[in-house]
Image 1 (cartoon, rainbow, N blue to C red):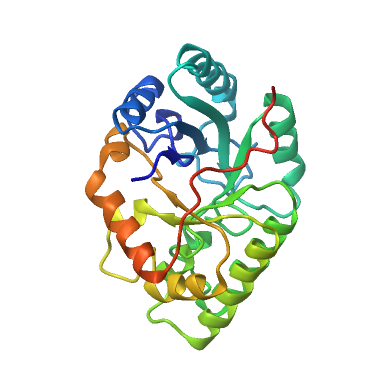
Image 2: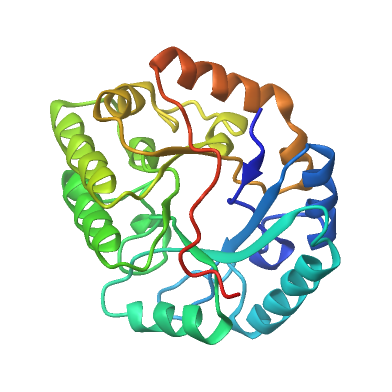
Length: 263
């Protein structure tokens, strides 16, 4: 059973539930030794951005204050880390760098949800430019991985939600991003949120992608992608993921290296 989780959201993102402390208490119940909070990062809004899928920038101070307070309160029982889940937005990465430095974030999760800005048609899970889906997804992913700002790659196969069927081009693109993540020693995440929230169409985690990951043998982590404290004690889903990866010959990392941890 996993003993760490670094993909945890809070109510501030407007589509999660439970208090910050509720997540810590459920992590303790689950026997976790480390819990990382990585709520959807705030951005100064582009005019085309959606405003209902992440914390407002005005809440960042509150987020940092409360997670650091819990870190101190529970220091003898569990290690708590402070991070965000963020996209790669061309021309806006100085904003993310400033967020990291200003708030002394321990780590940053790459959640490659959108291309350029946040509207439904730009969401990689429901992309309105299917002809260029793989091209755009790969370009954003490669730039993100090479930026040095991201420590962990969440749901790397999210793009399959915009596809009707797997293609040779999807195989080739997946191999390239998996090899790049391996080269840079950035773990790719087997995302449990996709298992909990199944759809009629193709979705992640997608078997053909993970069969490729097994062959390439880069670092892999299981991520709960918790949007409710109860997700941390969803043992059935966790065990299902562990069993699947074991059958593929994948041994997930036990913990995430924290190169930015501020002593």
